[in-house]
Image (cartoon, rainbow, N blue to C red):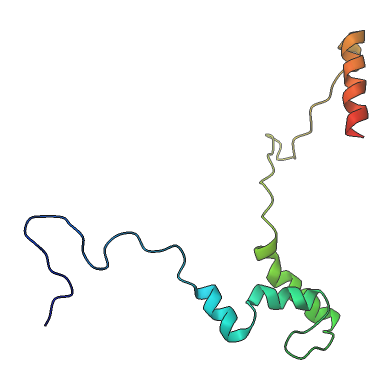
Length: 116
């Protein structure tokens, strides 16, 4: 059986096939070349009202199923909701405006005006 590389004494050195592999193996590109679109592309076309394979308008039930299947690829999951000891969602902080002086109230009005 012939060797694919020649090791020249000692340890280490360059070897055929060693080292970090190139980023991505082109699976998505090969899939797109073969089938013309990725599954998520197909689902999004269905959601937008056109079946890419037939060109027809899909039924509402089929569009809903496509949206459900495409969602994990398009939208991030929401952050978990914190709960307090009573297992109720925690309430946002409430600001007591009576504790603010005139300058602080003026600054708050400016900030809220900018926020729209």
